Length: 283
Image 1 (cartoon, helix red, strand yellow):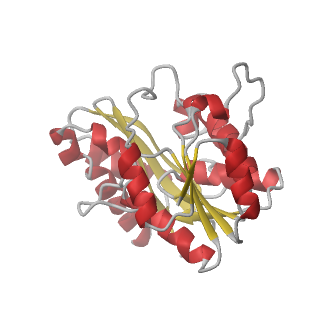
Image 2: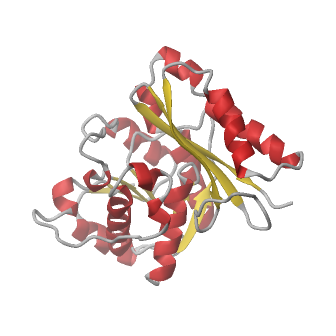
């Protein structure tokens, strides 16, 4: 496995790398969810292709009161995991390598980023789109894989690639959950023992809403009410949002009809904000 912290060396490697080049961008603190994306990348790359992983805790997607300085970093464990999974290139740049001292250009998305996490984290997706654009230019992948746990991010990246004509195929990786249903996340590390015991109710509430859908319910208000009822029993939590949206354009829905829908939520457990979602397949 080649490890690089420099853009020029990474570009040189990627230009010469056997195709297809499959890319998995991450912020590190890798867990089994990330590992599943890397395994998927290995399959897509085949025996002759190349798998590249980036680890970069991107400062521009964190708000002033968010957890950039405390975000978990596990350099040795992350390196070991990537090596064990057969990653060909690990790109681990410093902030000074990725950003000039006085940057004046951002990549902004103006519709999908105004709802859900974008509504409560102003500027977050500007940071995401900007850094992903930079990573795409550096690595020049044929395929890039993003986890479906952050469905909004995945939808926005797909839209950005479409609108800016990137010759890159974007593929989603299924949510990987703990045995009790909690979606794997680097931020789960922040949870106290008590908060960790309550967090699986997120997936339980989503599953209950999906059961309503399969029983014939289609009203978004009913799904939201069901989830709120379950979460209201959890002390020390605060709901950021619960929304039913079109899976592609993320616009809020009042009813689930003939287009794929996503129920997405964000909930604070103490100071830790967790997100999750579930897809409502077409009837």
